[in-house]
Length: 203
Image (tube, rainbow, N blue to C red):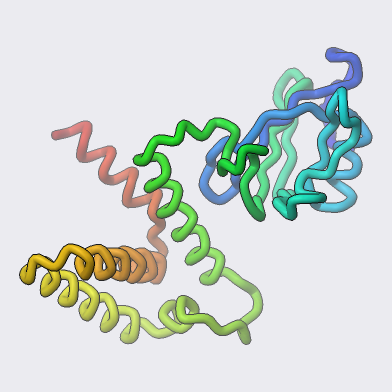
C-alpha cells in the first residue's frame, strides 16, 4: 500500500486528485478506499470507489483508461495525487477534464499541449525500430530544419495570396514542424509558454 495514506479520517476513504502527467491539467477528483488503491497499484490503471457503484475501474466500459504514473499522498494523508496518462476523456460528459469550461482558448491550448505531448512521447520511446513521420524528423536534424523552412515559406505564400483556407492548413503544418524542431533541441511547448509569460510581465 502507498505509504502515508490515512483511511481513518474519512470513514475509510481518501480523496484522489487525478492529474495528466504530461500537461499538468487536473482531470477529475474522486474517492478511493484501500481496495481501490490496491487495485490501482496492482494493475497500473486507476480504480476509484463510488458510494453508489462501489469499486470501479476507470475506462473499463468506455476504454478511457488512465495509466498510472505515480501516486503521492499529501502531508495529512487524506488526499492522494494520481499522475496518469489518460487514454481519452476523463469526464462522463465527454470533456477532457471534469473542469472543462468549454472556452475556445482552453480548447486551443489543449490541442497544442496534446500535440507537444505526442511529439515528446515519440522522442523518448524505447522502441528504436518504431517508425513514424515524427520520429523520422526527430532523428534527422537536416530533414526537420528543411521541412520547417518549407512550411514557413508556404505559409508566407498563402498569406501573400490572401488564401484563408490555405493559410489555416499551412499554419497548422508550421506549428507542428516548429514543435518538432524545438523538441529536437530539448525545448517543450511549456518552455516557450514560460518565456512568453516572462515577456508579458516585463512588457
